[in-house]
Amino acid sequence: MKKAIIIAEAGVNHNGSIELAYKLIDYAAESGAGYVKFQTFNASRLVSAAAPKAEYQVKNTGNDETGQQQMLEKLALTQDDFTLLYKYCQTKKIGFLSTGFDHESVLFIDQLGVDFHKIPSGEITNLPYLQLIGSLGKPVILSTGMATLEEIRLALEVLYKQGITDEMVTLLHCTTEYPAPFDEVNLNAMLTMKDTFRLMTGYSDHTTGIEIPVAAVALGAVMIEKHFTTDRNLPGPDHKASLEPGELAEMVKSIRNVEMALGDGIKKPSASEIKNIAVARRSIHLAENLPAGHILRETDLIMKRPGSGISPMLLHQVTGKKLKTNLDKDTLLTWENLL
Image (cartoon, rainbow, N blue to C red; front, side, top):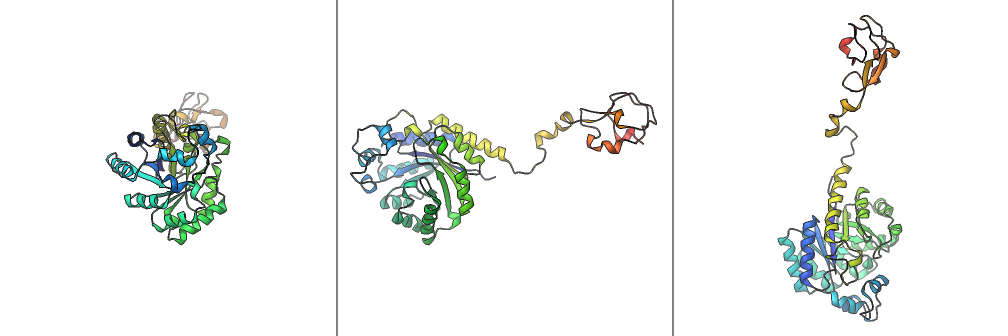
């Protein structure tokens, strides 16, 4: 089966430091993730000066800033920074992605040569933004946190009008809360989206731990996105809902193990099971010492291991047969013993 694409979401967990961003790339590459993803934005184009911080942002960052714009200004990297990070990813053999949050940032990311454009959940109702992403002609990852099926349909309609096709879209189920409560994850909604839109579907995870993205892959997710950080205790809005490097590597390993375990769906003995068939199953044996010429009855027979003789499923083909020779109790019966 095709492996799920795993995106290690660095986001703004570099805290505005390119040195920390380099470390995040190192950890993402070491984990085995396919991509590391950042966020590219101009704070003044993204939020107004009056926009308040989200509740989770206040909880995780305190009241040091007056609002979102001031907070985001501290977390922004420059285009030159992202060019360096893109090149560094190439040396580390990991794909580079970044979500652009404004027109200029999206075009800049596109010119870097990313494989996908990621539409974050908050932009699913932003018509001009959707039109811009659709016009670029690259595969699209559409995150659907906070969205209804109708809002997803309308966003897809915009992308389709710009020339995006079904094969170019991956929908990500998401719960937009940091961290997301387990009882609000609703992983089955990912399956609902898949059935409704007949598109590739995956999961963007904001829960703590690794079990939910692993479960999503077991349910058929083709893409997983997960926030990670160098240290959950660092200041910043997203660190608390992020994995640390060892946990990220464990998530990737667990996902790959689950993918191997899913197999091809054909029910048959596996290669390692075949050698155990004779050991674990039973064959027809004699329950008593019996003479040559004895006509076998069911009461003469007992089912015991090993399973290298006549299968108990053929019991009624054995009864009524004559023994060729004298046989002792506990003898494993073979067709060569019978007339």
